[in-house]
Image (cartoon, rainbow, N blue to C red):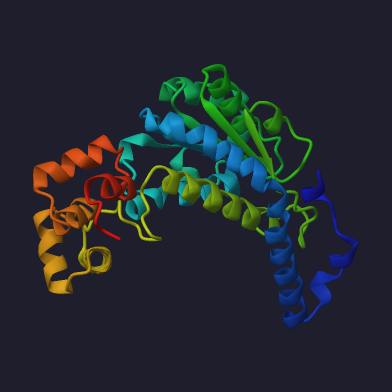
Length: 297
């Protein structure tokens, strides 16, 4: 596995100055970002398969161990406040349990059968989207997760940093970000981790956009649940509707913090009508506006 190899270029890293080390590691981060380019088509294919399943009510299920598990949980956790993704449709499967996010559980990642059992406990089905992440692509726990999820008919997505890996063969959508050797051999929190974060950013964000949770580059599906988010919601409503922020604040209050409903209220729809229109258009604000407020530009 290339991620475990010692790079001749960095073999004397420990004798370098701080500035030299940092420059070398920075170059590694840039190369990690560049490595993602070759996987863009595969990411798009995974998105286009995942979206219909999620529209049918499926869940986003993230699985991994160690660094990969932590990166997976970070990506998934941010879907709730950013896009209003329902908490009951988000599942994290981490080798050793969620406690392993802050304290390593040695040996947990080596149990492929536990990965299978985790999918059985989750009751994974055909409408679920299961994303398994492993830098090496060999982690038995994550392989077990994707093997079981694929067997259950779920949309399975594998993300690895080595091109020839068991994880890739058990998923419907294999995605490779080939980052090669690390500055510090085996330290996949570096280049491999950066590439994983980029891929997950692209994957989950595109899924949320395709599900209608973004309008004109704004997070219109979020709920205004605190002061910061309420101000953000008021700003979005003001820009879309073309009203003052004071009027927008009133609309956000009337809609109980639902930005999409607030926008439709501001464009002249009644509360019941706004809710019905959004339901009819699967929550897509652009479609709702185009079909219900034809004069709006």
